[in-house]
Length: 126
Length: 141
Image (cartoon, rainbow over all chains, first blue to last red; front, top):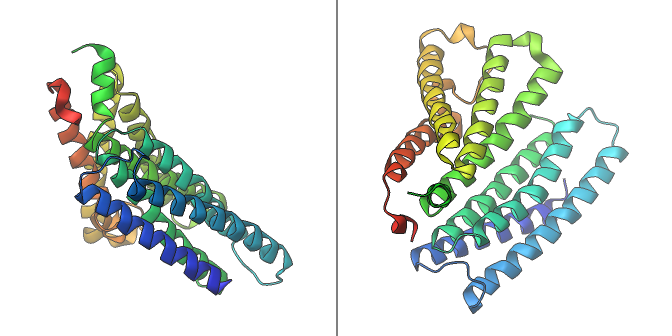
């Protein structure tokens, strides 16, 4: 679809996921009181904003295209990461041990998977 | 162990990660099953019904593990047990009689299409429930 945005979102999600796993390895809770934890929170918020932009652009493109696409599935993969990421964030922040960051990592890693599926559906083989 | 401590222990530490992964699978399985049943149910009714069953089990496991009271943990235990039985049975049948499943389910080939997470998840769920059943209060920290 919009390859540059999708690529940027994928890279951001992978960087943030690696960051989250680093926090797990360092045994740091997501307390949002250090540079490391505030940094990942900021990156996750940026990613969420980017995913919202992708959802809007994606829906506009879907409405504008004449091609045969599985529209409902496409919209599902546009909206799912927008919903999943904040849920993972809330579920992660409520944990007061290193396992909080691992929850965020799961949410972040689901984003590239959904972006790949989005690209496949847009390309027409899904 | 008091009821609210049990619930908190169930959803803390590794339990919180377990519930998060269950949540992702609940969402994915529900969405996938809804699309299959709405768009092409007659192509592979058995596979799609099993997908729907898997979706229900994942949602149940996610919610009941997060609630975590004594009663809800029993439902969680049953969900994980059904899930393990499902992935083992469907996994075996998909190799022995592939013609029964013209389209893949989450549990086909023991969940190989999903990195075998569907096979590992119920085992971890059962182990976690067993471990927290008699857990000391500081297990989560």
